[in-house]
Image 1 (tube, rainbow, N blue to C red):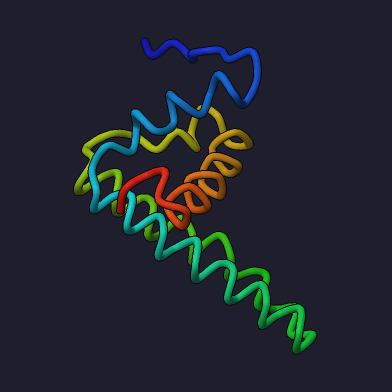
Image 2: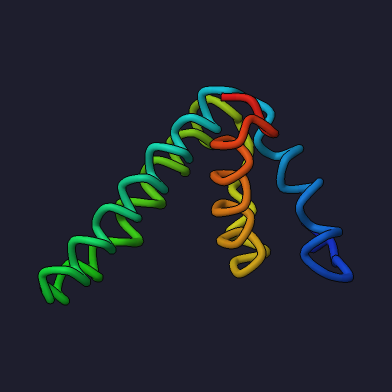
Length: 103
């Protein structure tokens, strides 16, 4: 039976999150999905096309889960740590943009 690892806070979770994203293709797919999410969100807000908000999870998770299941060969952290995982995705995105995490 899988045990759920506990974390004191996000700063404890993020190193674990990065360990789950060692494969560069997985990270790139996350980056593409997050970019698409941000573009869809901006489009929805600027055009008041609120129905686009329903597309956000599909756009983000499709890329991420393909990365995990086919390249990283692990289960996404989303299944056990949904909120930290979502935050981790955006922090990793920022860290990739500034060169702290490699593409």
